[in-house]
Image 1 (tube, rainbow, N blue to C red):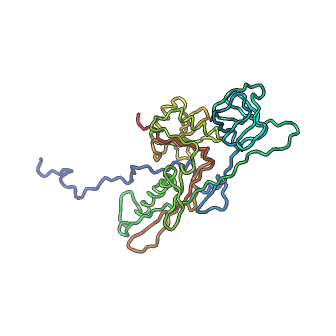
Image 2 (image 1 turned 60 degrees about the vertical axis):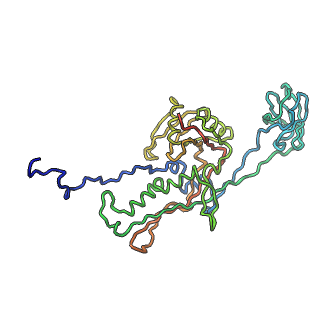
Image 3 (image 1 turned 90 degrees about the horizontal axis):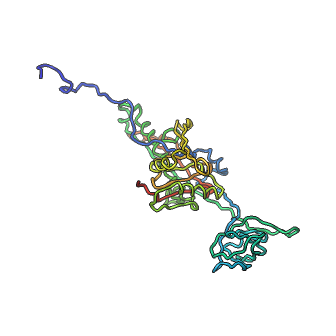
Length: 380
């Protein structure tokens, strides 16, 4: 080494550091479902709420009388029997035309769960039928001049949910707040931004709010229970499918959508995790359309074509890989009892504090308009 020469590694005391003036977070910051399904007061109009806000919110729902039942006749019926026992006789009345396999029968009288029937109606062939067969009400035909007859009616239901408080505070000492730092002009505001950003669509607390979609259990608040809103599984009970670790297929997806359509619903979004996106992309190769939507921050919208119309595939990093959710976005969303806000706490010591707090609930209308699959394999 040359005597008297200076090198970069011999004396670094006075060297200026090359430091980024921007902090790069290696983390997900967005909560996409909040944007898609809504978390603002607009959702009160979606659900037609009155007397809002309240810590308990209810929906009023009704349904049409069923068009199908099941035979409940031990041993079934022969091709000449004129009485048939069903599971729910209240669904039927005089004049109903029923279809059992390929035979049509006319109901002439109803007594409890016993139907008096005319066999081989309108030229169809009378046949023997086993017990537990499906019975479909296909139409009603009354004789001319007959007296009126009332039919089956349904009772309204009131699915409900509770509100849940989500909060976290950021605290910074007076000394730390005055420190000169790279990339940070205000330490307290920086910590608050990590909790709550982009009007509530990003940050730790909105992410915790979105996680209620998958995991939250409904619990009423009391002096000993903090209280929480129920998530999707609290409401959806009809169209639920356990794959028992089998690989998901297009048939599984079409079955879920078909069952929703059969009930009168419509699927707008299919929510899945990273594994699900990979599987669906492979399954629907050639049947995918991708566009950009600037209203979602320039995000890409992926639509898949199914026999029941196009469905938007939503990739959510929070969704468990073994689960798939079929959602009608017009019938689901979060409601703000008190939307996220940043509150400055009065100074009581050698520090500064800001608290981010919000109170929300989650609603799902017409649970048969939705579905979910769980237990899907996550191995190739």
